[in-house]
Amino acid sequence: MGVAMAETVGILAPSVRRAEPTVSSGAIVALRLFDVAYAIDLVRAEAVLSERARSSRRERLNTTPPKAMDFGVRPVGLALEPVAIAVAGKQVQAAASARVYDFGAITIALQAPVADQPWDAFVRNVNAVDRGFQAEETWERLLRQLRDLLGPALIRPEATRVQEDYLIAVVDAFDRPLSAAELQESVDLVPLLSGEQRPLSEGARQDLLRHRFSYYVDDLVALTWDRAFIYEPRGDSDVRDVLEVANAQLLEMRYYDELLDAELPRMYDLVEEARRTRTLLASRRFAGLARRLHTMVAEVTELTERVDNALQVTEDVYLARVYSAALELFRVNALNAAVERKLAIIRDTYSALYDESSASRTELMEFLIIILIMAEIVIALARP
Image (cartoon, rainbow, N blue to C red; front, side, top):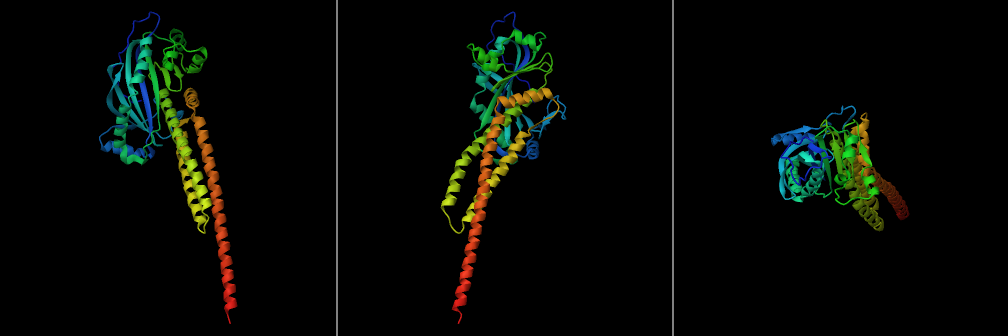
């Protein structure tokens, strides 16, 4: 994620059970994603950040070859000042960073490193950090800072409140080498993935553990709707990046779904009003409304295509599986289908309005022709 290491989280440390492993190194990463504009000019964003003496970089996946999987349009990443967060009554220093996507989304990441914590303590710290990172004023302050920094690069800035959050618990190393199978035999992932302290039913446990993936013998990824656990001894960040992109796609699909939900009733009212007020200029009213709908369809289609192509997957089967599972889990494909259905309704309405506009123009021309014929008849009869 390009985030600097900061003060280690050290809260709620219980006595160590002999059988449980200890997290030697890792991190707790909180992501908050915001829709801030119709689009963001990334070239301009880099120039603006350079002018303001802020270092930035175009991101790519860490270890995956670009031909196998890469960002469609590489986002711009930048480091922010560390943030102090109150967690379980203590101040924790969290490193902060941001990513800027061309389709108008910004991701802010807060990362609290972890070292030498027994598994049970690690789980409780994940839950405590999750609660601590819910402080809205911290995210709002960071978002305002980014808006100010990127101002000239924001194309049609919006004050939308659509946002997403996601929590990732990362383990780079345990106190002893563990395979994925040994890890799952040694610890219970359910309390970490659910955030619940009470035991869950067997059905709920199975649902939570349904999306687990391993590539090597000693790595593991477990996904849920709002949390993920990553055990990656090689320190690769590609899975985190893929989960971030999936959340960014969810954010944008939610935004367009809500936008079209609000637009459809307004469209119906405008169409009804245009049909009620039949005048000689009705064709112009229909044509103006049709142009507006056509523009909306074109803009939404263009942006949703950018969102769909945010990550290009070709050869990396493992990351593709993780990515596809995240999209399914986050219901991105279902939202995408809903957006397409609503766009289809608007396209059909546009076609109907265009036809009515053409029909009105035809009626107007026929009326004018009749008037001209009658005028010629009157003039002819009036001649001596």
